[in-house]
Image 1: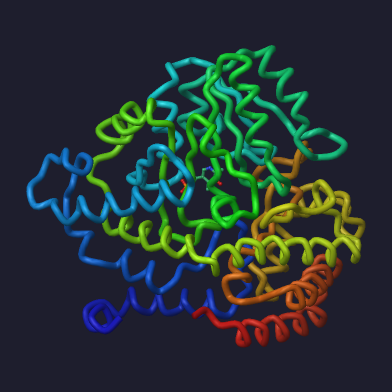
Image 2: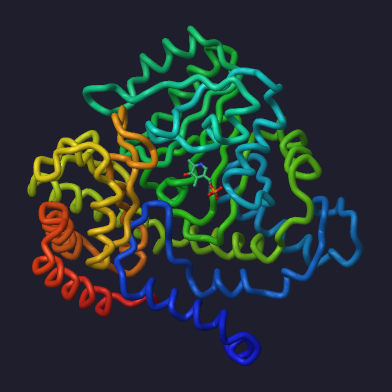
Length: 415
Ligand SMILES: *Cc1c(COP(=O)(O)O)cnc(C)c1O
């Protein structure tokens, strides 16, 4: 940061402090990742200078020959990586990508079936405070109350009863395998479109560690910055027959000039995700999450659905005996942050408390795995997390844990 160091030390100071924070804490937010230096370089490149409204070979500005090349390269790589018929690489983020799909195929007040936010869905899956919930008639399915896992017979029953135009699968806080095939079949049975929002698990899917919704699902949206470990952004994948409607919906329907520097960074991330190393990475994320889950459960921490199949773990603090109360998520997350473990408070299925005072903690292993940690570190970190949750206000215990976390961070620096 030589130049910015001279022109704007104020901003440099903040960026440098944030780098130190990322290096000196165990960041376990399930939706985050640390990108490679190559992805960073592409995101910071001069491609940010160019306006390129439109699509390759159909632009509204001159001087876009090279921009077309980069966007076509990103598209070609995404198609190969995900086995998709058509890919739009322009969505600026996951939320606009989802809105673009609805905007293309769903009329105002048409019905959409998804999972609600407090069950593990996303804001854009019909939350009343989101545009999606205001524009469309969202109905919801839930996880099973006893197993806390999706019951596909129940999803089918609700789909048959509510007759939606679109059925959404894919979540922000669901620790189990998603049966995309059956979601698609149910959609076809009731005459609905199928959509999979794989934002959280895209990296696991391309790494061969979770079943893919492609090529059969009608629309697949994903962010590129979560397990996929690319720049902050999103893509939409669909069958060829839907391609032109999706493209029109993104531009000019929703966005203006595409962020071509980010599209270049997406291309770089897609190439990284094609390597054997990334497949190993995806499998290690899950192996780490499973080890962490076992360690926590052995120490009395109750997990939603009693474990995990993917990169995330949802702790139920109400059924964790040492806590045993509703609405404790924020306080426990604060205690964890005090020892250097960064997580987020999250609702748990059928949470009796409110989203502002949730009763769960969501943990993920993507960043720790990026830093090179394996099962033995997960065991130790699991012990430290359980100790913190079981003694959230004990200063002496927490001070000892903090020292050990700092050592672990030094041993596994961001590279
Ligand atoms: C993260 C996420 C999104 C939204 O992504 P943003 O880039 O934050 O807008 C949408 N859907 C799901 C399932 C997500 O996990």
